[in-house]
Length: 461
Image 1 (cartoon, rainbow, N blue to C red):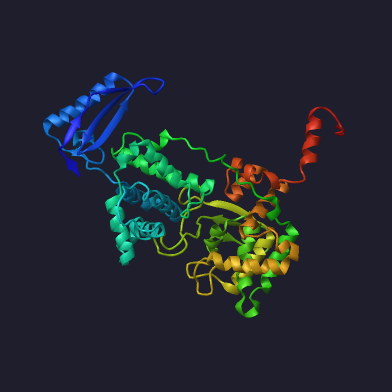
Image 2 (cartoon, helix red, strand yellow):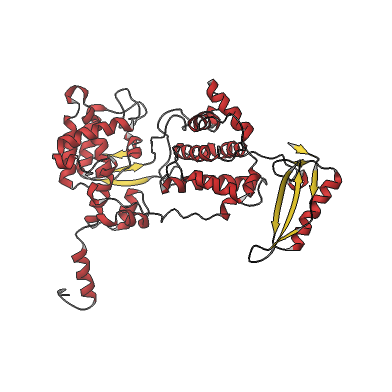
């Protein structure tokens, strides 16, 4: 909204700070505005620009308080519009999980950067409107239920211009929202960091579009604890005997008719013997595998099918289809596989064949196997293979723990860290941080090497 009712006051000095600052104050349609400057010269210059705009008869914006000439001649961009523009720009190249993260973060903060307005919808309704109708690019044309349509109209009217984030109070409100769940309880530190990164990038985009002169998030530092290294809990790691017993137990899950366990036995074998991520195993094709009649084989991993949700994939399927994690599109990872896994894969192909597109692992209908399905089978296998105390423990609690066990077994077998990292798809630095507590049995060997280097024999202290 624009107004010609503008008054510009004289410059005042703020002496409450260590160094005096100079305040330019003006009023637009009865609404006071101010801007602080470090020197009187800067304050004089800014006030002169306001006076020049006033003399020219320019209208002033009632929200930002600025004339068009001081906003680059651009119409004020609402925070909601920024979120939509940002997603439009990033959506095509983003993975499904990135799309999920971006909409989660923006749906968290868009309802915060608003003006007081009657009829504010309930928080869960606003979030649903943003997450399921307004923000995801392919879902914007969907028919909206009346409750959602009302919420959309409200947020469109209430959303403040991005320029409002020049106010430090607004920035603090935004950051507070990033650290809370919908029920008001504190969110996990990892969730806060992920959301903040998304919003930071969105505001950087606003700077690119020249709707902000600088990123307001850089003005506030908020400590949320140290960035924890996600070390593997050694209690989840099974030993080779336990791994074999679990894989054997899968043959009993679902019985002979349904064969739900046998259908997934080689899948879980890939997680253990080749230390593959579940999404990588789901994307594995027959053409990726070299499976000799005896000896070692190898797998050339080129694709992953992570669970993402239908709302975020281009195909509308629950699983995304991407290149390998942290690798360029088309880049492959070669993993030599031991004879036990070669046998499992050959047996699987003999009994179940492949899906129409060549994938090794699929449901009975040929679809990508849902995480809920293989997790349910894994739970039953644990109950068959482990003793009661182990079943109630964290030992191999998740299918992903088989990957941890596989990597740990390689490291404890003395395979050099760079080779393990290459096979597992990690950087060496991350590998050693994550698996630091799972490398056993080498302390005495390392101590002996140190003593030999010192020219001593028999480490007696």
